[in-house]
Amino acid sequence: MKTIRLLLLSFLLACNLAAFAQNKTVVMQSDFGLKDGAVAAMKGVAITVDPSLRLFDLTHEIPAYNIWEAAYRLEQTVAYWPRGTVFVSVVDPGVGTDRKSVVLKTRSGHFIVTPDNGTLTLVASSLGIAAVREINEAVNRRQGSKGSYTFHGRDVYAYTAARLASGKISFEQVGPLLAATVVTLPYQEATVENNVIKGNIPVLDVQYGNIWTNIGQDILNTLHPGYGDVFHVIFYHQGKKVFETDAPYEQTFGEVPVGQPLAYLNSLMELSFALNQGNFAAVHQIGSGNEWSVEVSLPAKR
Image (tube, rainbow, N blue to C red):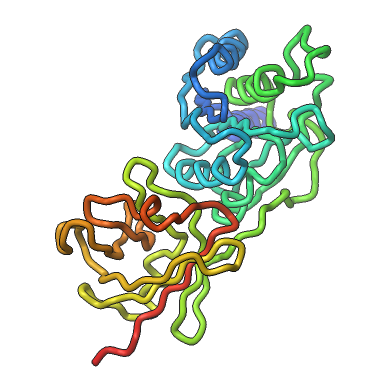
């Protein structure tokens, strides 16, 4: 009887561990847009694997070939989803080449199915790498698709993600275990030295042209700013200065006159810059990506 109980306990434990990867939720992002049937084809493949899957879109409006923005949108989103959610990210200018197709399991319990081309740069850092497996396409590839070399989003990634999310395969059955590292893109991490904070401009608030940085509230507080204090800000592209300005640190846009700059904390509690009712990025020709950086200082208070 004791042996039976132990076997039953082991079975239940195994089921619980399997369920960790099987919440039947798949979230997709790509640079495909919605003008044609590419995204619908990916969803059709997933539903064919398991009609009970829940499919969601992160975005399909990543600028074409922009691996960095794919990395940022994952960073912006993944942590807000339940453990066990499977993400598919397909921004793959090297489709069909020797870049690896992988599934990253984060320490937070999320799974990301993607080419290992830099897309995992930010989530690997923030959520940690529990394990990385290379997709075994001999098993985890849509039947009848071996002659197709340019739509791995449909034939490999959506198919593998659906099999994993539905529990038809375990994480171990994705393919061989790789070293716990991923391809990363270089960028300026948020650092502080001699009362100067350096950071990256990962993305723009595209609707309004606000400048978002990766400088979080904790590191910003090392300067001990108060609302109304004025930051000195320098923007760089590939290490060359593009624009320099002063901006008061405020809680809301309306605390400065229309058209004037301000610094504020965005919805991710990261330092950002805006023109009240204006487009900061367009006016001052500021872009975003891993090649853009910023320096912020707070002159001594009088």
